[in-house]
Every structure is written in C-alpha cells, then in structure tokens.
Length: 223
Image (cartoon, rainbow, N blue to C red; front, side, top):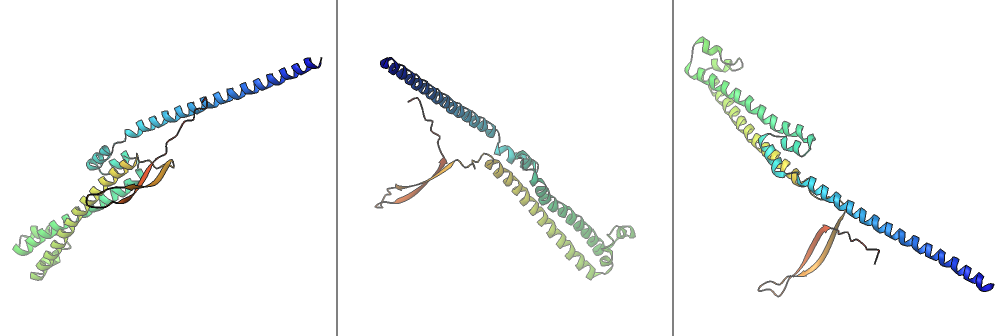
C-alpha cells in the first residue's frame, strides 16, 4: 500500500516536472521566435530606410540651387532657409539695379554738363543733379565723383550677388550630403595601436580610430 502511494506521488511529481519543462521549452521557442521576428522587422525597416534615403540626391540639390536659388533648400526640406536665401540674394540684386540707374543718370548729366544741350535735354536730367549741371566745372567734377561711386557700388553688388548665389549652392549640397549621415546613438568608438613600418625608419607607432556602427549578434536559444 505504501509502495502504491509512493508511485502515485512520483507520478504526480514527474507530470508536474514534465509540464513545467514543456512550458519552459515553449516559452523559449516563443521568445526565440520573437527575437527572430524582431530581427526580421528591424532588418526590413533598415532596408526600407536605406531605400528611402538613397533617393535623396545631393546632385539634384546642387542642380536645383544652381538653376533657382532656394530650390535646393526646398528639395532638402529646409524651408526655414528660404527667407535667408532670398534676402541674401535679393538685397544685392536691388542695390545693383539701384546703383546702375543712378550711374546712368550721372552719365547723362555729365554729358549735358560737358557738351551743353537744348532745354529739352536739360529737362531730362534728374532733379537732384540739375544744380550740379548748372554749377559749371565744379558741378561737373562732383557729377564725375558720384558716377564713379555708383559704378563701384554696382560692381560690389554684382560680386556679392555671385558670392551669395554660390553659398546657396554650397549650403544645399552640404545639407543633401548630411541628409544620409548616421547620427543615431548606435555607434561605437575604438582606439587600438598599430605598428606601421616605414622605409629608412626603425618603426612607427600609430593610433587607429575606428568609428562604426555596432553589430547586433543574434543568440540561438535552441543550442
């Protein structure tokens, strides 16, 4: 009778141990499948991100900015830079035409002052320059100085226009290159010594800086 009770207790303990082991094994399988699924989703997401990012072309950003200022910034989705671009290019453009207009007015006033002209010709002289035309030699010298100043400012305006146009292109190109730059926290930094033999030198020691993305290792729970 005691033997039968002992066998029953052993059977119950065995069944409980088997059930626990089976439950643990199922948990490991589920966990392993979850890890594999997570890794698959991660790889799929990484591939998807790679495909999406590869569509962003720095060459297009450069070409767009060269054709139309600000177009490269729009392509890079840096819309907040548009006012800066148009202000940087618009101001030299405005000053260029302003100085060009006054240069032409001074040039015409100088012509009338030097050669004379009819009353109709003198009437075409700008109101601000008429006193200088009537002032004789002194007025002619003043008109020449004004004309040279406006010509110089016109040249400076053209120069600044070209500079800001070029900076607009450079900005769009750099932004487009940085669009695909990896700036996440999943990076590793290693320093290791390296021996580099050189001709005519006994030896040299260098430090190698290795910056790369950390590799994820999948653990197989079945083994």
